[in-house]
Length: 143
Image (cartoon, rainbow, N blue to C red; front, side, top):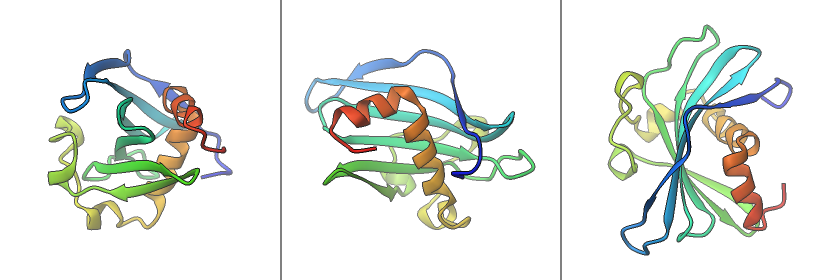
């Protein structure tokens, strides 16, 4: 994915709620990861100010024919020793129940059916969506 031109198209405004355990803001947003006019993924994120360096991404993936891949992959990310560490969440651990027309949350096995592509998508989103990348860099992560 590094040799492919990538762009982010945010959809709608970012909004916030308060965390039930620490009362700090949780920011939510949605967007599209694109390459040369083709959808690579639709994504949703959740960033909690009260849980430093932790965020969640849900990713609806598209194949090379711009067709939706069944199941939305849900990834938890954390910054540990200046490195992003990802974990694929099982549906019951995901912060979202489902995504309507995009489908239900995929289990770990389904999310990894296309190998490491889901992690490449997470890297591309985290690096190219300024709403996330600004927060990630503010934690001290070296890009």
